[in-house]
Every structure is written in structure tokens, then in C-alpha cells.
Image (cartoon, rainbow, N blue to C red):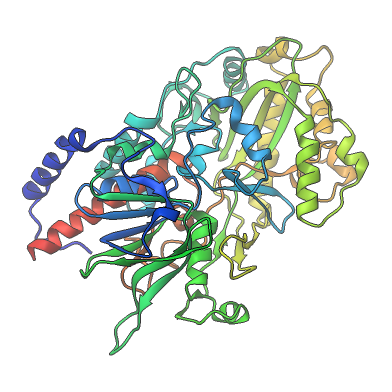
Length: 561
């Protein structure tokens, strides 16, 4: 904890000078002075801070710490600037090549999912919605209100924009208000009950901005970014004399398989910061000997700390969607409008030319990778080879209440761990899904959407059509056409908001320090108990900035004491 003797005037003055000096240091992407491929790295290097993962949290964290300290940022992927526009969303997800910025994994529940493999993390491959966590969420997790607001604003100056709301998004917005999801909150980043327009990381030209853009805040003389650098394990000084094990570096490989060592410089406050995401962070702790002892031993990993809670509390917010073919052309839009309901379910929308044939391709690829076979009639029925104009309305559950676990499948960090999310295991989640789908049905039948449907189209007919698509690898039941409960279970997909595995109070403390270990923190969505707001990316970026500022404050106080 931070000493109560610190001087707030000194602290404010220090950071005032720091903030004013930022323009002197800034460099525009793609960061030619400090970003390079890991193959060019020396065999042994040393820094004040080593950050594992240049994702949604890691970029903000690195940019902040580099204002005062030498920072190494290790990213297993490459730069995100090759496919920056809104039309690249589905193609990124369908790309299963080894160099894809989106790495496929399939949960044991039979649901297709992805994890980012690119600088900027999920913000480089997602649907772009930008919205803050609620005030209640901030209070519940114990964050400082003012520092949270300042950190959000710091992020928003680089990556957040007010979207251009056109015909489909406006129609859904009006439909939500028509069926009672009120009030109309207009455009806002705030999390408020009712219907609102949220922010977007796509600018007015349709260009994506990502967490990687936050590195423009970095001091290029004090940060080193190594791309295509896969961390193998965290290294520790041996514990002795009643002392805890202390992280003192990492071992990583470049794209040619060469091994490199990165050590922390001498200094009791230097740290390794793990920001590898909800899959990568618990996986890395386990590969480094921190996790359930029996599981580690089964993989031949020496146990540094028996910590059975690593990998537990894995949750994925379930999503169920309805495709609505339209007789008129629709704008290309990802998520812009959201209805935040009193029953804690979020109704969102997207639109554009929909190439449904990619579902068949993805299903075949997914099934092949999972060594499973799909019924050909399920793969082909309902899929069209030519694009159709369509809108999509989806339901995402808050929380959720249901949770599962993560287990190692290999000692190779490139191999995805096994993840079980236990969708709808808690009946409260299923109840909320049913309420959400009923709300979507009402929106589909509303007068606001009348001109966007073909004649005689009903919500039930659209629900039935969804049952013909290969949305996942789960079994289908005939009762799904008449039971919304079964429909939710059978057609569940991800909205890529999975979290947990290194949760606060279980694996890390409230300062995100790994319990039982010195010199090691986890700062990313793996620490969340619940997913914040309707979309977590704004809050994960904020957390990187927030914790970077807190760590700098700790260093300032430590230097004075």
C-alpha cells in the first residue's frame, strides 16, 4: 500500500511536469525508433520494467511507465496497421493462418472464439465499440474515481470518436425506445440504463484506432518494443530465508526460434508486468510454475507456488443474435447503439452486406481444427453464396454469473490452453437471455424496423433461420424453435469479452500484485470478476494507464522514504 505520508502537492507538481513534457517525446505510429522485430534483439538485455503483452492494457501501461523508466514491451504478434478499416473485421476472424492477428480457439463448450495476436490486442480486431464501466462498477472494484476519469480521458484523446449514426442504427435505436428501453441518453461514453449511442475506435473515415496508438504517448528514448517475441516463461530469484520468490526476468523466443533473456535491472521496485490477456496471463503463470500443483506436475513443470485459483473464474459473456435480411441497402456499421436494460442484458446492432458463405468456411475450418465433423445439412442449409443486405441485432448478458476454468494443454506457449466457460450453467443467465431475446423480438416487430424487413417476416421466422446456421459446435434440439431457453443454449456464440483466470482477491491483490510472489503483477482483463460495461476495451485501456500512474506514484513515494 502507498504510504500516507506522501505530499499531494509534490505528487501533483511531478505529474504536471510529466504531462506537459509529453509532446517533446511523442512519436507517431508505427514507431520506427523503438519498435523492431525480436530477431534483432541481443541475447541478453535489461530494463526497469518488462511488460509481457502489447495488448489493450499493455500498450497504455508501457506508454505511461516509459515517461520515467526504461521499459521493454514484448508482443508475440506484429504491427496492426496493415488492415485498419471497418471492412476487415470478419476477414480477420476468418483468417486461421499462423500469421493471422486473430488466433482461433474453441472452448470445450463447443463455441468458437478468438484471441488477439497483434500489437494493440483485441482493440486491433474487434467491433470497435467504446464505452466506460458504470460508476457502480468502479466503486465495487475500489478504484480511485478521479484517476479513473483522468485515465479514460487520456485514452479517449487518442482512440475514441463519436460515430456517424445512419439508417439501420437509428432504426434500432428508435425500436429500442419504442419497446420501452428508456430513456434516450443520446451519445455518451457513460454506462446508463436506457438506450444510447456509444463511442467507436473507428474514426469518421472508417479507420481503426487501437491501443497501439497509445504508444504515441511513450518516451521513445526509454521504451523498446519487440515484435514477434513469444515469452516462454517468467524467471525468478530463488526464495530463501523466509523471503518470497521474486521475478527477475523473462525468457522469450523470436520468430526464428532463437532464445533471448530479458532481466530486470537492480532495484527493489522494478517489476515484471503480465498483460497477456485472459488466456495468456493464467497460461504464462502456469508455464512459470505458479498454479495448481497437480496440473503443473502433470506437464512436467516445476512448482514454484501451488496456487489452485490460477485459471479459475473464467467467464465469457454469452451472445445470441438474429440476422434480419433487408430489402434495401444498409450502411456498413459495427456496434454503435446499445440498449442497457434493467434486467442487465445489452441489446446491440450492426449492419451491412453480409456474406453468409463465410459461416460455412469458418465452420468447416473450425471443425477440422477441433477434429470434429459437422452434419453437412447443417453446414449448407440456410447459407447463401452471394452477399445479402442485412442487419443484426444481438443480446449480450452482463456479468455473467456462470464461470468455468482454464487448463494447460501443452508446455508450448503457442498452443492454446483448454477453456471451459460453462455458458448458462447459472439459471439466472438463461433467464436474462430469454428476456433479452423477447426484447429483440419486440424490436423486430416494432414500427421503427418495418421498412427494413421483407413483407410477412416475423421475429419467430428469423429465430428459426438462425437455427440453420453453423454458429457453433453444440448439438441442436428440435425444441429450440419453440423454447427460447433452448434457443439460447443452442445458438450461443461469443462476443469476445471473456475474462478471469487471475482474479483480484484470488490470484492478485488489489494492487494487482501476484499473491505470494514479489516483483510480479498481472494487469489486464484476466483480473476481472465481471466484464465492465457493455464492452470492456475502454476499461482495459484505462486500467493500463491507471496502474501505470499508480506505479509511478509508488516509485515517487518510495524514493522519498
